[in-house]
Image (cartoon, rainbow, N blue to C red; front, top):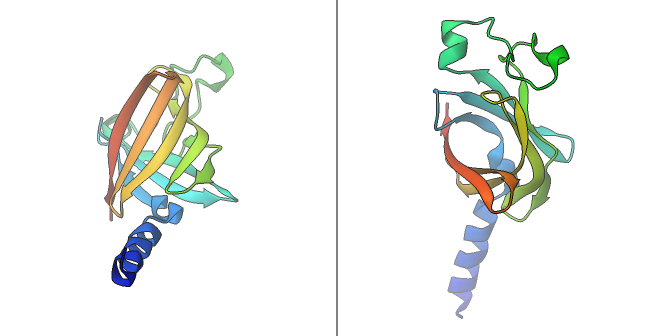
Length: 136
């Protein structure tokens, strides 16, 4: 491999920094917007808006399996957390799905500067993947 090819490879590898996950992301469903920030050594994500929240800003977490949590607002609710950085992705974390009130094992992979791949699993191989796009 030539020196130029090695430099290009190193630049490309460096371009996929795990910090690129920080920002506002549009989900595949219900026009959700999730704000992902650094939380210590990890990342966490809060639901900022969705079609449901726009229609009802007081929308609560009514499907939560814990009755004590069913009154909390979905707007601002942390739905991602507990991740460990592993190269160009975050693993070992979880994602909360308000539609069914369940929490799933999750990974967040940086595809490029404007695209994330979010994978949630009941257990492997029972997983679902969404592609989220960066919004300003």
